[in-house]
Image (tube, rainbow, N blue to C red; front, side):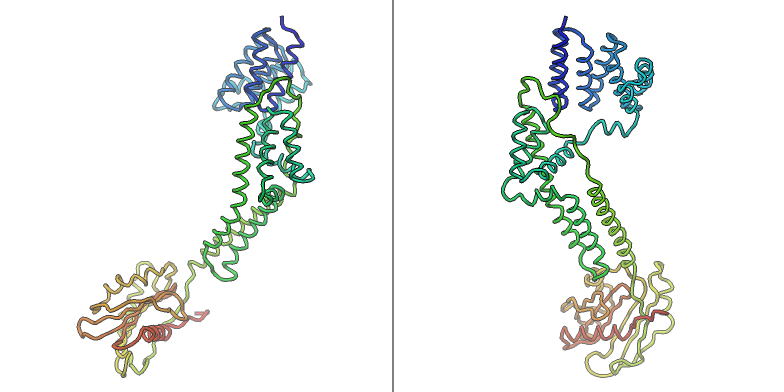
Length: 475
């Protein structure tokens, strides 16, 4: 027969190992006594709970086998019934329907044996999804972050926090939580890492300020004038770099601390309670800061998305205002046939289109032709103008090309490209400039036997701004 004192000591030791996260060793301690002295309900319960703590399907199956074996031997043991009920009620009803269905049956048995017991209350609470999540406990990363925050805010200095963590970890080298805290403080205590320590203590405030900065930048593009979106993206990346550096440091410390604790010897009884206090959740102020920052950034993102879309589809309105005379030349009208260009446009983007010829006069610029369309061209791009080869190839009369260059589009904005060429039929030296903006596109060509680039651009801009006038707001 086994000694009750030996069983109680082994149970306490194994329970402490579970609290320290050394689940395999906890099972080994309990199973060693069970093999030597025979079945004992509390030790069987410890083995089952050590399997449950792994939070894996295979270990849950092992835990169920232990519970069923134990209840065959001790059918009315309240703790065993409660533990098995918890396992069944927390199982997935779709993945393990049989196990999940056994939960209510076990609860009824518990109500018969111990109607007001804490075991029944704990097992009953397992039916709640929230209780299941709470029972699994916080993640290792969250525990590490909150332990670190507690240590840095309560100690007189980072050095004092590191010294205290090293002392406590030395007393319980098998405790994963203490080992991780020690490794983390050691890493943060290195020279040059004061900004990361500040970030640990003020992470909610930093997140709020970072999200506020992003929101301001997103909205500033519509208030102060457009600037490249990559500027905002670059700021977002820069703001994320400190958080990324801290995340990598914490991950490395978790790995080192966990490996050190797993390799430590657990000789002798482990402490009955973990030496660190329970993990504290974030304060209400911290949660409000994080939530407010996230809501602000999201609102700014939605607002700037809507405004960007509205700005993108907006386009300037123009009215055709070709004068009868221009620079000493006389306009030749092409008749009503020009109206059919806009009417036949299948996309509905062209509101009006015209082509005018100006002849007569004297000097450079005589015999000028201008073709333009007005309408909704909000999806116009610079490539439509700067790919001059495509435009010139579809322009009648263009012969050998002398040169092409990007020109200043002038007060109306948009894009302009100019070229000089020799006309096929006449052999004359001419120039042609194409332009486009969100509300118009067209071309102007004229004689340019000895005109400079600046003169060609100037005549093209003057022609464009003379033939097209901004439409009045009430038109």
